[in-house]
Image (cartoon, rainbow, N blue to C red; front, side):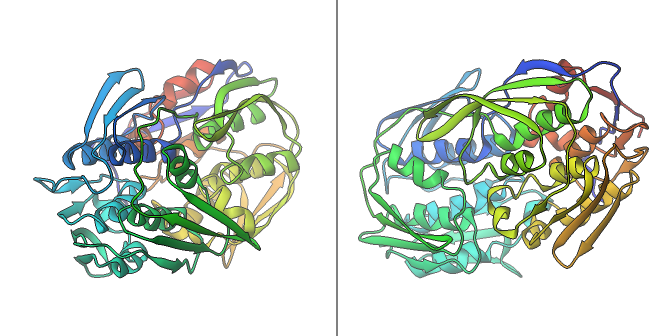
Length: 449
């Protein structure tokens, strides 16, 4: 079993009083990555507020600096990026280390593929084990060359195209990362780059491309979309207010739904419909969720979420919802374990290639704490009793931050405490998760390893 070098085991216990408070969660990770990248590719100075200062995003900031952009942290989530313009990036002097961030690595492949420079990219042990061919294979068609370890794994050497060709690619499976990598590559290629996706995936790249002045057309075709991007635009610096990450908001929301008498308000959360599938599930489960102060910021829909305790019922989650909530299945499974009836989450093949085999890890989390759970091919079936499970388990997180946070939320509802073998890596996506949850009244205590 993998552990971080300084494991921090943690135990979650049922609090004596309801959870309550008004909070903001860290900025959206997907939008934070893209704000830094598009800022580096634009002309002028982009100011960013609310940037997620987790390890993954800081790796992107360091990479854009290494490629010649001036990236400055002004404190409190306020950053500025003085961009180089499309085609203006410079060759990095050293290896680009992307840490644990698959998003940063795959999107950066797209940028580098159409710039006539040489770069080498690596990451931590987890990222070096994840395949990159689903981006490097289609990107090769622009004229870039990639050399990697067996199976297309990092470290990866990239020789960008001298004169990039526009791409025309149909994604075999829905993937916002692959789509975004191809669009980023197309920015520095003449003509029109065309991407066809079989199902609509999160469209932060398209929203931000428009925000920075690119010409982009999106055509809906059945469940999917066809995107046409006009290459070699002059991207202009544009300020970005990063909304709160709905994937992070899911944890305090879920805790409020599970602890009797609780009521929690989370301000300024991103509500992009291609990301907010969990909210659709919660409404179907009968959760007491309301949205106030809806608005648009930086091309993205935003609102304030209020969650209150109440009974939950089982639902059947269709496979088509997976792209809009791929990271939320572990916390949805925790909620399902406390709901009345059997919840079936369909078509979770994509979960097997996340930070861990997240499908197996989610099932193990529940089983360890007294929940009856089954995996049927790529479906997860959770047998809820309408009351919290017994708890008392020690969860092997496999260095997966979402498994760790989901287990710690479950422990707020169970009779016996729920422990995780390590919480150190939660900071990669949700800095101060523990402090924020404690501020609402959650009980999280260190335990000896």
